[in-house]
Image (cartoon, rainbow, N blue to C red; front, side):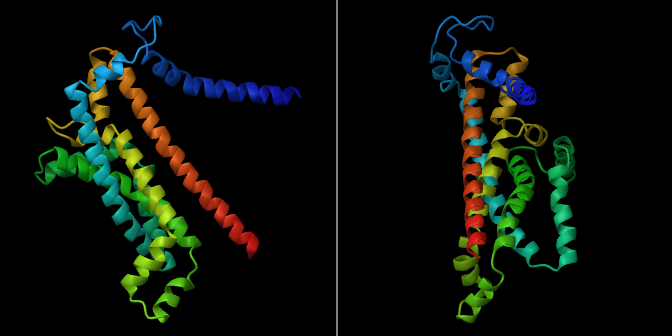
Length: 266
């Protein structure tokens, strides 16, 4: 009994320290006063002022533009790469999987500086294009690792059966393989979008003057002092990422339930 109580208290403390700062941030985003010391009243005016701020709206435009392009391109390339890796021989597959895991395990600061040095060496002007390329590079491994498990669960004979029935390789890929692995593709796309919206380090090192996403804008605004608009913006970002993560978890849980039913039927 005592052990159960201690475990619950320990778990509650962990969640408290993890989420208390976020809860305070959300509460003070509705604070009528600019003062951070006390809550004087409930208001939506900081959210209204947020959407009237040209700097923030411009940063939001670049954030969504980069995230949509990066997630779309990385999902397309990552899906093709996952299919290619899956069909390779065991030794080649192991080597390429290790290479794919490397950017995921690599610290973001190392990846960011490496990309910045590469762009400078290629005489590419840092700006929107380099930020998009960097985000695609950053998100690509996560898409590959999201799609590969679905390919492993796929019946290896289904592709050959489609070819035997007269389908061309491209038609079999589009009409048979892609629909079967679609949950993994959707999970990879949502994960790529979330990572792109959330990223700061890689964006900071690979962008140029005049191009700034929300994370960079929040950082520059916070250096001049915490404004209530930053609380409102951070709250919206947190809710956006939370919704996307809930969608990813829902898709993942659905896949697991389907796989467990298939295994039981076998």
